[in-house]
Structure formats: structure tokens, C-alpha cells
Image (cartoon, rainbow over all chains, first blue to last red; front, top):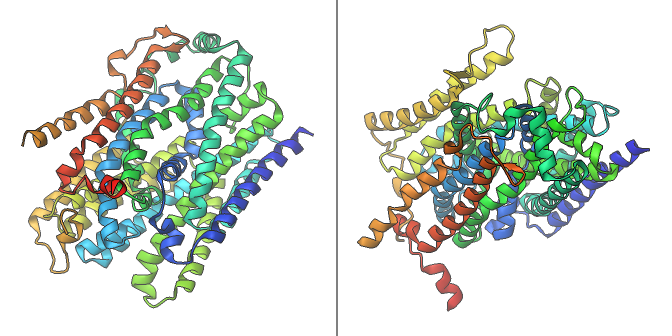
Length: 494
Length: 80
């Protein structure tokens, strides 16, 4: 009986989210700019939540509480510092400048912007290709999270692959039916929904275990080291490398980066930026603390399940636990949709059009994008069945891969002397190095290269430094090509 | 002149905001205050402070001056 309620709530909720997308699709225009950027008409609330919701992923809902459960509530600090503060600063440094440039020249993608500035279709394709590579593990992460969530919720009655397949089907259905406008609206609704429900969940759980003080003291009784800041996994090296790679990585995620082009006005971008730290805190605090408090609760988290659904199942009614998981899955679905949608625009605009078929009709392009999304999500689904790491590990890999793009892009945005060759060297070399490290841990034939050195410093942090050195160094040594045009990035005057 | 020099003060302000979002001075501290470890309260207060200072930064127009884009344009449209 409870299984029926659980699955009914989850599937029902996902269907409602799909319906909202369809309505949005009806009011949407048919041009590429509308499909991808909702005609650059997004207001503060929607921009804030659509950016917020794309961060609402399995990484936050399940990976975060799981890590807090295993290693302590310091994860709240890591995520808060990077998402709440560092990302907000980068929002200005990268986002606002990109918005100014994009608005002048009508860019839709990061690759398009860079390719136009440096007069290089190769650079454009390189940036798009790299972005698609790292998008893959992040989409996979959502499928893994959904699979594990359903295992936790139904106590294993529904297998891991079932949950992963469910979300994959909804992802494909959704993104092929609606464009960014649909995604942006469901993001807003789901963001507000998740924000409220996660607080209700925290209050519910806390009152069941005897209040805030009681929850914290039983947490400390079970794991005394959770009370003191730092220690264990959380070395300064780990905190600093996670915060930097994730915050810089987030700005280069196709779905986030494309958001930098969609604001209706500069004022919208600024208001969103101001509210950001508080919004982030409101979500992370209850979600991660439930994970940390769970160590003091008499619960049993099955192998391969997420801690959040297990806690909710124990202390809240069946329908409520199912509702939270449904909300989280729907938010993940809409994050994945944003990713897939942006990924498909990278594919059609930066790879297919310039290199394969420059004369493709809009209609053909739109269909191609949908087929691409379906194929991409299906491949990611199969890869997610292999479960190559924990949610945090898989997510971190994707973040670091994107982070390697950030410094060359900042260099291009602010330094007129940046050359095409400088960009290509600064982007390509660190990517090849990092990809080698990542693949060495997946492929059984080669020895696994270390991901972190000297007490937790992420190798990606060193590669980020390398990317900056190469971009600046090679730019100094080479002359700008005749096709490049630094004035494309000018924002002052007319 | 002095205005644009004052704008540069935002650089160290942001550096401090980013650096101390992690409660480094409380490393290893394990006091519990009002039901939560004290370093969590630091973080909560810090992010609130960030929002406050971010809004001051936005209102100051320092960014627009630094980029050389007019800051008065958008409100001027609404105000007529």
C-alpha cells in the first residue's frame, strides 16, 4: 500500500511538472532565441530561481546530505562559501560582462562568443566540445541520484535502475516538448516548492526527535568530531580546492553560463546577485543539517541508498516523504533539462551548423537538437548504471572539468591582448591533462593517476593555474590573428 | 577621482567576504550555541552580511564606473 502511495506521488508530481512545461511551450515563440533563451526576457524572480534551480541537483539534495552524514556538517560551509559567495562574485566578473557583450552582439553560447571574438571556428568548436564532455557526468549524476533516492524511499522495493530510468524518460519527454521558457517557469515553481518543503521537513524531523538542541546533542553523542570545525575529510586543502573548483566550474556550466545571456536588463542581474547568498543558505542549511543530524538517529541507511529519504521515511508520513523526493526529483529533472537544452544548443550552433551543415533550416536544427538530447540522456543513463563513484565524486569531476575553462574565459573577457593561440593552448592543454587523469580511474587497463596531491589539494586546481599561465604566456608570444577583433568585447560607449 | 579610488575599496572587501565565508578563526572550535555548532552560526551571519554588502555594491554603481558603462541609464528610463 505504501509503495503505491510513494510511486503515485512521485509519478504524479513529475506529470504535473511536465504539464507546466507544455503550457509554457504553447506560449513560446518558435525561434532559436526563444527556444534557448526565452527571447532574453527573463525577470528577476525567474532568473534567480532558474539559476538557483539549475544548482538544485542530486549533488545538493542527495550528495550533500550523504556527505554530511558520513563526514560532518562542514559540507555546508564548503557549499555555502563557494555557491553563496564566490559564485556570486563571479556572477559579476563573468556573468555581467557576458550579459553586456551578449546583448550587443546577440550571442547564444559561450563558444559562439569566443569564436566570434577570436575569429576562430576551431575555438568555438573546442569550447562546445569540452562543455559537452563534462556535461555527461553531470547528467549521469542526476540519474544516479534519482535511482538511489527511489531505493531509499521504497526501501529497495524499486531497484536502482528503475528510478534512474524513470527520470531519464521524463527528462527526454520534457526537454523535447518545451524550451527554456518552459524550463525557466518550472524551475521557479520547483525552486520555491523545494525551499519551503525542505524547511517543513527539517521542522518535522526536529520536532519528532525532540528539538534542535536534542538533535545536535545526539549527533555529537554519536560522532563527537562533528561538532568541531574541520578535521577528518575537511582539511584546509580540501575545503579550498572544492570551493574554488566548484565555484569556477559552475560559471562555465552550459546551463548556468547561458543564463548570463538571458536577463531582461542589468537591474535584473544585479537584484538576483544581491539575493543569492541568502537564498543559497536557506536551501543548504536544512538539507545538509538533516544529513548530519541523521548520525544521531536510530535509523539504518541501506547500502547504496541516500540518507535523506531514509530519515524522512522514519519521521514523517509516507506521503510527505514521497512528496519531498518527488520535489527533489522534479528539480533534478528540470536541472537536467536545462543542461540538456543548453548542451543541445552548443551542439547545433557551435558544432553542427559551422562544420556539418551551414544551411540547415531552423526546423531541421530543432529536430536535430531533440534527437541529440534523447541520445545523450540515454547514453548517460547506461553509464549511470555502472555507478563509477559517489554522487559527490562524479559531480566534483564535472565541476573541475568546467572550472578549467574559467580562467582563459576571464582572460579573454578582460585582456585585449589575449590571442587565439593563447586561448587554444590555455583551454586545450589542461583539459587533455585532466581528462587523462579522470579516464585513468575509469579504464581498468591503465594505472590510476592521483586526483589530489599533498593532503587533499585537487589536481584540477593546479591545472587551473596552468590554464591561466598558458593563456597569458602564449598570448604574449603570439600575435593576434587578422580575423580576431577585440572590439567585439568592448562594452563602453557606442 | 576620489570616487573611482574609493571604488577600488570593493576589491579588498570582496576578498575578505570570500575568504572568511569559511570560518577559519573557529578551526577546531566545538562550542554549541543555541542548538548548533558556533561555526555554523558564523557562516549564517556571514552570508547575511554578504547579501547586505552586495546590495551596497550594486547601489554604489562602482562596477559601471569601472567598466565605463553608464549606470544612470536604466532608472532614467523608468523615471522618465
